[in-house]
Image (cartoon, rainbow, N blue to C red; front, top):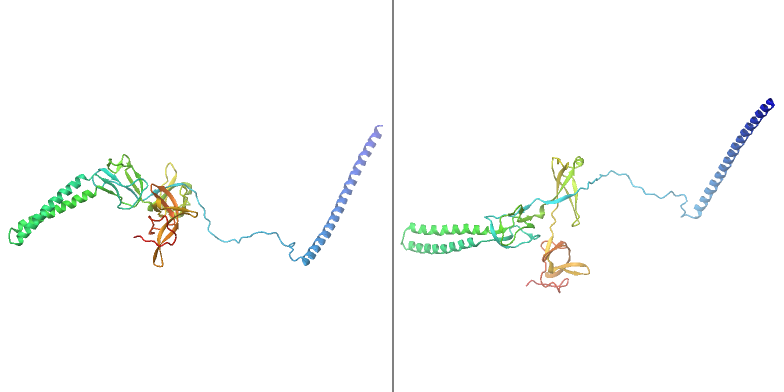
Length: 364
């Protein structure tokens, strides 16, 4: 029984192994046969597709079955690469005038400006108390009139052979001395007129009528005039950009509050790095871009926008010309004109309400 079982078992194992090898061989052969058939079918299909394409191309000339996929191409060229660094800064001015008395401090009798006003160099800003100077001038003028009368009398006598040359010279010297005193007093009186040393706008006005004008009110200037033709943007550049930043490189300045852009360049670059900020201060000048200021009352509006009238010339006649303008800020009775007018235009300030384009005008 033991030997039979061993033989049976061995026979069973051999039988199983023999059937597995036969099945595997048969499957591989079938797969190869199937692959060859598919390849043959593919070649036939490719031939049929090519034949149909050729037949269609002969009949339909607009067919694009042989065309490639539509793409776009750009030729490679050498060109500079511009890399910008976005930094924030603040606007400052090179030409700031802190107005001070040219003589001794004095009490303010009148003010002729207000914050935001545009002023010109030499314009009268304020008037200080001048009672003392005016009284001195009046006294000196009275004395001069008397001295000139004495001199005329003495000269007449001298021409008649009466009197001495010393008397004539003394009378003449008296007149000249009084004239010198008057000139000196007039110069002192002129110092009571507070004038602007620069053209610009009134940035600060910390002064009222009746107050004493000394130039400073505590730590603040009483009158500060900023010349807007010399503005600059001051920016702190982090030290990690220092290898890329140098004097003269171009910059683009954006003033978002007024929506204005300028092209400029770095005009100044400090040589030291801030101990705390770890940055270097740079400056870039803002190109001068003066705006025109006109009376608010002359501005009119129609379907095309805001406009004013100026005087033009046509065929030798003076006519009204309509100018469309772009306006800015309003202050008091004045309005800023950013575009549309030029310095030298003759703005019509009276009689403009009923004018029309091309109408002959006269200024009287």
